Image 1 (cartoon, rainbow, N blue to C red):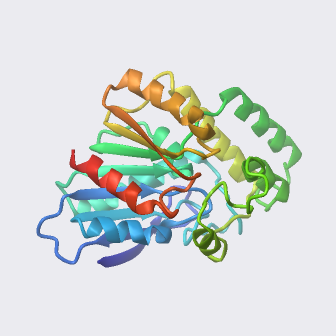
Image 2 (spheres, rainbow, N blue to C red; image 1 turned 180 degrees about the vertical axis):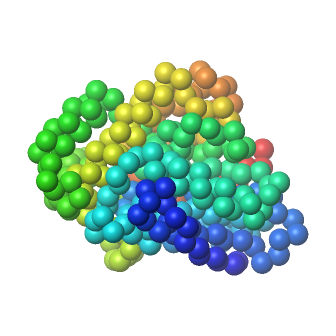
Length: 297
Protein backbone atom coordinates (compact mmCIF):
# COMPACT_ATOMS: atom_id res chain seq x y z
CA UNK A 1 0.00 0.00 0.00
CA UNK A 2 1.22 3.47 -0.90
CA UNK A 3 0.50 6.32 1.51
CA UNK A 4 0.66 9.92 0.31
CA UNK A 5 0.20 12.95 2.56
CA UNK A 6 -0.34 16.41 1.13
CA UNK A 7 -1.27 19.81 2.53
CA UNK A 8 -3.82 21.97 0.73
CA UNK A 9 -5.44 25.23 1.86
CA UNK A 10 -8.56 24.87 3.98
CA UNK A 11 -11.61 26.91 3.11
CA UNK A 12 -11.34 28.64 6.50
CA UNK A 13 -8.35 30.59 5.04
CA UNK A 14 -6.24 29.82 8.13
CA UNK A 15 -5.71 26.06 8.28
CA UNK A 16 -3.36 23.95 6.20
CA UNK A 17 -5.61 20.98 5.51
CA UNK A 18 -3.91 17.60 5.86
CA UNK A 19 -5.03 15.10 3.22
CA UNK A 20 -4.10 11.41 3.17
CA UNK A 21 -4.35 9.12 0.14
CA UNK A 22 -3.89 5.35 0.33
CA UNK A 23 -3.50 3.45 -2.93
CA UNK A 24 -2.65 -0.10 -3.99
CA UNK A 25 0.86 -0.49 -5.39
CA UNK A 26 -0.60 -2.02 -8.55
CA UNK A 27 -3.19 0.29 -10.08
CA UNK A 28 -4.18 -1.65 -13.16
CA UNK A 29 -7.61 -2.79 -11.91
CA UNK A 30 -8.84 0.01 -9.67
CA UNK A 31 -12.48 -0.33 -8.63
CA UNK A 32 -13.06 3.11 -7.21
CA UNK A 33 -12.29 5.79 -4.64
CA UNK A 34 -13.53 5.72 -1.04
CA UNK A 35 -13.60 9.09 0.71
CA UNK A 36 -13.71 9.04 4.52
CA UNK A 37 -15.10 11.89 6.59
CA UNK A 38 -13.88 10.96 10.07
CA UNK A 39 -15.34 11.42 13.54
CA UNK A 40 -14.84 14.00 16.26
CA UNK A 41 -11.46 14.10 18.09
CA UNK A 42 -9.82 11.65 15.66
CA UNK A 43 -8.00 11.96 12.32
CA UNK A 44 -7.40 10.09 9.04
CA UNK A 45 -4.34 8.22 10.31
CA UNK A 46 -6.63 6.12 12.52
CA UNK A 47 -8.08 4.53 9.39
CA UNK A 48 -4.94 2.62 8.46
CA UNK A 49 -6.56 -0.82 8.89
CA UNK A 50 -9.52 0.29 6.80
CA UNK A 51 -7.14 1.52 4.12
CA UNK A 52 -5.15 -1.74 4.12
CA UNK A 53 -8.34 -3.77 3.77
CA UNK A 54 -9.74 -1.79 0.86
CA UNK A 55 -6.52 -1.07 -1.03
CA UNK A 56 -5.97 -4.86 -1.05
CA UNK A 57 -9.32 -4.98 -2.86
CA UNK A 58 -8.30 -2.43 -5.53
CA UNK A 59 -9.81 0.70 -3.98
CA UNK A 60 -8.10 4.01 -3.27
CA UNK A 61 -8.95 5.38 0.19
CA UNK A 62 -8.58 9.05 1.06
CA UNK A 63 -9.74 11.75 3.42
CA UNK A 64 -8.75 14.99 5.09
CA UNK A 65 -8.19 15.75 8.75
CA UNK A 66 -11.12 18.00 9.63
CA UNK A 67 -10.23 21.53 10.78
CA UNK A 68 -8.46 21.44 14.21
CA UNK A 69 -8.20 17.63 14.08
CA UNK A 70 -5.03 15.59 13.67
CA UNK A 71 -2.54 17.41 11.46
CA UNK A 72 -5.04 20.07 10.29
CA UNK A 73 -4.20 22.39 13.17
CA UNK A 74 -5.58 25.91 13.16
CA UNK A 75 -3.68 28.99 14.42
CA UNK A 76 -6.90 30.24 16.01
CA UNK A 77 -6.94 27.66 18.80
CA UNK A 78 -4.98 24.77 20.31
CA UNK A 79 -8.14 22.69 20.85
CA UNK A 80 -11.06 21.56 18.71
CA UNK A 81 -12.25 24.71 16.98
CA UNK A 82 -14.32 25.54 13.90
CA UNK A 83 -15.06 29.09 12.82
CA UNK A 84 -17.75 28.18 10.28
CA UNK A 85 -19.44 24.79 9.85
CA UNK A 86 -19.67 25.29 6.09
CA UNK A 87 -15.86 25.25 5.89
CA UNK A 88 -15.86 21.58 6.94
CA UNK A 89 -18.30 20.76 4.14
CA UNK A 90 -16.27 22.73 1.59
CA UNK A 91 -13.05 21.03 2.73
CA UNK A 92 -14.63 17.63 2.09
CA UNK A 93 -15.46 18.79 -1.44
CA UNK A 94 -11.94 20.19 -1.94
CA UNK A 95 -10.41 16.87 -0.88
CA UNK A 96 -12.61 14.97 -3.32
CA UNK A 97 -11.81 17.31 -6.19
CA UNK A 98 -8.06 17.06 -5.51
CA UNK A 99 -8.03 13.26 -5.58
CA UNK A 100 -10.54 12.93 -8.43
CA UNK A 101 -8.26 15.02 -10.64
CA UNK A 102 -5.48 12.48 -10.08
CA UNK A 103 -7.77 9.49 -10.60
CA UNK A 104 -10.49 10.57 -13.05
CA UNK A 105 -13.28 8.32 -14.31
CA UNK A 106 -13.39 6.17 -11.17
CA UNK A 107 -16.60 5.89 -9.11
CA UNK A 108 -16.39 7.68 -5.76
CA UNK A 109 -17.96 6.33 -2.58
CA UNK A 110 -18.45 8.43 0.55
CA UNK A 111 -18.25 7.27 4.17
CA UNK A 112 -19.14 9.57 7.05
CA UNK A 113 -18.69 8.55 10.68
CA UNK A 114 -20.19 10.47 13.62
CA UNK A 115 -19.09 14.11 13.13
CA UNK A 116 -18.30 13.19 9.54
CA UNK A 117 -21.81 11.82 9.02
CA UNK A 118 -23.26 15.25 9.81
CA UNK A 119 -20.85 16.88 7.37
CA UNK A 120 -22.09 14.45 4.71
CA UNK A 121 -25.73 15.05 5.64
CA UNK A 122 -25.30 18.83 5.24
CA UNK A 123 -23.57 18.57 1.86
CA UNK A 124 -25.77 20.11 -0.82
CA UNK A 125 -24.63 18.04 -3.79
CA UNK A 126 -23.89 14.31 -3.57
CA UNK A 127 -24.17 13.63 -7.30
CA UNK A 128 -20.37 13.16 -7.70
CA UNK A 129 -20.70 10.08 -5.47
CA UNK A 130 -22.05 6.66 -6.41
CA UNK A 131 -23.04 5.54 -2.89
CA UNK A 132 -22.78 6.79 0.69
CA UNK A 133 -22.34 5.04 4.04
CA UNK A 134 -23.37 6.83 7.24
CA UNK A 135 -22.13 5.36 10.54
CA UNK A 136 -23.01 6.39 14.09
CA UNK A 137 -25.27 9.28 13.11
CA UNK A 138 -28.32 10.46 15.01
CA UNK A 139 -31.35 12.73 15.17
CA UNK A 140 -31.04 15.83 17.33
CA UNK A 141 -33.69 18.46 18.04
CA UNK A 142 -33.10 21.56 15.90
CA UNK A 143 -34.85 23.69 18.54
CA UNK A 144 -32.64 22.35 21.35
CA UNK A 145 -29.50 22.96 19.28
CA UNK A 146 -30.50 26.61 18.78
CA UNK A 147 -31.23 27.11 22.48
CA UNK A 148 -27.91 25.60 23.59
CA UNK A 149 -25.94 27.53 20.98
CA UNK A 150 -27.48 30.83 22.07
CA UNK A 151 -26.76 30.10 25.74
CA UNK A 152 -23.15 29.10 25.09
CA UNK A 153 -22.57 32.10 22.81
CA UNK A 154 -23.61 34.45 25.63
CA UNK A 155 -21.80 32.61 28.42
CA UNK A 156 -18.46 32.25 26.60
CA UNK A 157 -18.42 35.46 24.53
CA UNK A 158 -14.77 36.24 25.31
CA UNK A 159 -13.58 32.62 25.49
CA UNK A 160 -15.01 31.03 22.36
CA UNK A 161 -11.66 29.62 21.19
CA UNK A 162 -10.50 28.39 24.62
CA UNK A 163 -10.73 24.81 25.85
CA UNK A 164 -13.57 24.25 28.29
CA UNK A 165 -14.09 21.25 30.58
CA UNK A 166 -17.77 22.15 30.85
CA UNK A 167 -18.19 22.05 27.08
CA UNK A 168 -16.37 18.72 26.99
CA UNK A 169 -18.72 17.31 29.63
CA UNK A 170 -21.72 18.74 27.78
CA UNK A 171 -20.70 16.96 24.59
CA UNK A 172 -19.44 13.64 25.96
CA UNK A 173 -20.37 13.32 29.64
CA UNK A 174 -23.92 12.09 29.16
CA UNK A 175 -22.75 9.19 26.98
CA UNK A 176 -20.57 7.74 29.73
CA UNK A 177 -23.43 7.97 32.23
CA UNK A 178 -25.37 5.46 30.13
CA UNK A 179 -22.83 2.79 31.11
CA UNK A 180 -22.46 2.92 34.89
CA UNK A 181 -19.58 0.86 36.21
CA UNK A 182 -17.87 0.82 32.82
CA UNK A 183 -14.63 2.63 31.81
CA UNK A 184 -14.97 6.27 30.77
CA UNK A 185 -14.85 5.68 27.00
CA UNK A 186 -16.83 2.43 26.93
CA UNK A 187 -19.58 4.30 25.08
CA UNK A 188 -17.05 4.78 22.27
CA UNK A 189 -15.16 1.45 22.22
CA UNK A 190 -16.00 -1.79 24.06
CA UNK A 191 -12.63 -3.47 23.51
CA UNK A 192 -10.16 -2.60 26.29
CA UNK A 193 -7.07 -2.70 24.05
CA UNK A 194 -8.70 -0.50 21.41
CA UNK A 195 -9.84 1.91 24.10
CA UNK A 196 -6.34 2.20 25.57
CA UNK A 197 -4.90 2.72 22.09
CA UNK A 198 -7.33 5.59 21.54
CA UNK A 199 -6.60 7.14 24.95
CA UNK A 200 -2.84 6.99 24.34
CA UNK A 201 -2.94 8.52 20.86
CA UNK A 202 -1.29 11.95 21.03
CA UNK A 203 -3.07 13.09 17.85
CA UNK A 204 -6.51 12.44 19.31
CA UNK A 205 -7.57 15.89 20.48
CA UNK A 206 -10.27 15.92 23.17
CA UNK A 207 -10.11 19.53 24.41
CA UNK A 208 -13.19 21.27 23.03
CA UNK A 209 -13.86 24.99 22.54
CA UNK A 210 -17.29 26.65 22.82
CA UNK A 211 -16.90 27.77 19.19
CA UNK A 212 -16.58 24.15 18.10
CA UNK A 213 -19.74 23.18 19.95
CA UNK A 214 -21.67 26.11 18.46
CA UNK A 215 -20.64 25.32 14.89
CA UNK A 216 -21.24 21.58 15.36
CA UNK A 217 -24.70 22.38 16.71
CA UNK A 218 -25.34 24.37 13.52
CA UNK A 219 -24.42 21.27 11.53
CA UNK A 220 -26.73 19.06 13.60
CA UNK A 221 -29.53 21.62 13.31
CA UNK A 222 -29.10 21.76 9.54
CA UNK A 223 -29.06 17.94 9.33
CA UNK A 224 -32.24 17.83 11.41
CA UNK A 225 -34.01 20.33 9.15
CA UNK A 226 -32.83 18.39 6.11
CA UNK A 227 -34.80 15.33 7.26
CA UNK A 228 -37.87 17.00 5.75
CA UNK A 229 -36.09 16.80 2.40
CA UNK A 230 -32.93 14.66 2.71
CA UNK A 231 -30.02 15.06 0.30
CA UNK A 232 -29.85 11.29 -0.32
CA UNK A 233 -30.07 11.32 -4.10
CA UNK A 234 -27.73 8.30 -4.09
CA UNK A 235 -27.96 4.82 -2.48
CA UNK A 236 -27.35 5.03 1.27
CA UNK A 237 -26.31 2.47 3.87
CA UNK A 238 -26.69 3.21 7.60
CA UNK A 239 -24.58 1.29 10.12
CA UNK A 240 -24.59 1.52 13.91
CA UNK A 241 -23.70 -0.24 17.14
CA UNK A 242 -26.72 -1.53 19.06
CA UNK A 243 -25.45 0.14 22.24
CA UNK A 244 -24.41 3.42 20.62
CA UNK A 245 -25.77 6.39 22.62
CA UNK A 246 -24.94 8.82 19.79
CA UNK A 247 -27.33 6.88 17.54
CA UNK A 248 -29.89 6.87 20.34
CA UNK A 249 -29.34 3.12 20.81
CA UNK A 250 -30.84 2.68 17.35
CA UNK A 251 -33.82 4.99 17.82
CA UNK A 252 -32.21 8.16 16.48
CA UNK A 253 -30.44 6.63 13.51
CA UNK A 254 -33.57 4.72 12.51
CA UNK A 255 -35.49 7.99 12.48
CA UNK A 256 -32.95 9.35 9.99
CA UNK A 257 -33.08 6.09 8.02
CA UNK A 258 -36.88 6.25 7.70
CA UNK A 259 -36.74 9.83 6.41
CA UNK A 260 -34.10 8.81 3.87
CA UNK A 261 -36.05 5.70 2.87
CA UNK A 262 -39.15 7.77 2.12
CA UNK A 263 -37.09 10.01 -0.14
CA UNK A 264 -35.05 7.23 -1.77
CA UNK A 265 -36.10 3.54 -1.63
CA UNK A 266 -32.47 2.54 -2.26
CA UNK A 267 -31.66 2.97 1.45
CA UNK A 268 -30.55 0.23 3.85
CA UNK A 269 -29.68 -0.10 7.54
CA UNK A 270 -27.66 -2.64 9.53
CA UNK A 271 -26.86 -2.94 13.23
CA UNK A 272 -23.93 -4.63 14.95
CA UNK A 273 -22.86 -5.48 18.49
CA UNK A 274 -20.90 -2.66 20.09
CA UNK A 275 -21.19 1.00 20.97
CA UNK A 276 -20.24 4.04 18.88
CA UNK A 277 -16.97 3.50 17.00
CA UNK A 278 -17.66 0.14 15.37
CA UNK A 279 -15.05 0.84 12.66
CA UNK A 280 -12.27 0.60 15.25
CA UNK A 281 -13.70 -1.86 17.77
CA UNK A 282 -13.04 -5.60 17.96
CA UNK A 283 -15.67 -6.41 15.30
CA UNK A 284 -14.15 -4.05 12.70
CA UNK A 285 -13.48 -6.78 10.12
CA UNK A 286 -17.18 -7.69 9.89
CA UNK A 287 -17.96 -3.99 9.36
CA UNK A 288 -15.34 -3.79 6.60
CA UNK A 289 -16.84 -6.86 4.89
CA UNK A 290 -20.34 -5.40 5.08
CA UNK A 291 -19.10 -2.20 3.43
CA UNK A 292 -17.14 -4.12 0.77
CA UNK A 293 -20.21 -6.22 -0.08
CA UNK A 294 -22.33 -3.07 -0.31
CA UNK A 295 -19.90 -1.35 -2.68
CA UNK A 296 -19.85 -4.41 -4.93
CA UNK A 297 -23.64 -4.59 -5.29
